[in-house]
Image (cartoon, rainbow, N blue to C red; front, side, top):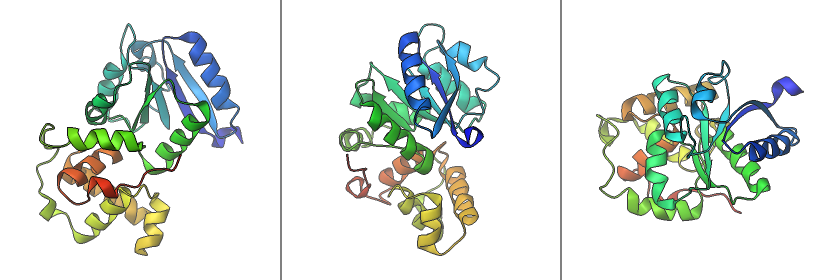
Length: 226
C-alpha cells in the first residue's frame, strides 16, 4: 500500500536527474519520493523535511550545499538517514561524510539497481560501506579524527559491547534481538545508550567508534556481496 512505503527525499540541482531518479525509485513499489528540492535551503524550508526515512543528497549545490543540509538536520536532531549521492565523490572524503552524519556516500556513477540495494541496507541496518570505502577508512581512522566521546570503552557494559559488535556486522534490530535472545525494544534501548555514551549521531558513527577503540577490527566489518 502507498502509505506503507519508505519515504524518500531527493535534493539535487539537476532537475532532469531528480525526475528520472524519482520515477525509478517510485516504480520499485517499496519507496515513495515525497519531497524533492533543487537546493539545500529549498529542502530545509519544506514542511516534510524532517519526516523522511531516507534523504538522497547532492554535495555541490548553490543556495545550500549538502554539508549545510547535514549540519542543519543535526542541529534539529532529525533522525533521517542520509545517502550522499554526488559526482564529486572521493573516497578520501569518507571520514568527513560520516562525521557530518551521512549514512552512505556514493558516486553518481552507481547503477540504479545497486542504489536500491544501498537504500534498503541503509534503511534496515543504518549504514552502507563498500569494500573500497572500508579500505579508505582504515587510513583515515588512524589518528586523524578526533575522539567522539567522553566515555572510555571500559565504561560500556558487556551487553552494549555485544550489541555494538553485531551492529558492525550490519545486523538489523530483529537479527540482533534473535541472536542475543532479547526483545527488539531492548536492542533499540542499547543502541540509544551507546550513542549517548559515545557521543555519535548514527550507526555509522558507532562503527567508527568501534574501530577506533579496537572493539572490532576493520577487517571484521561485514560488507554486502555485490
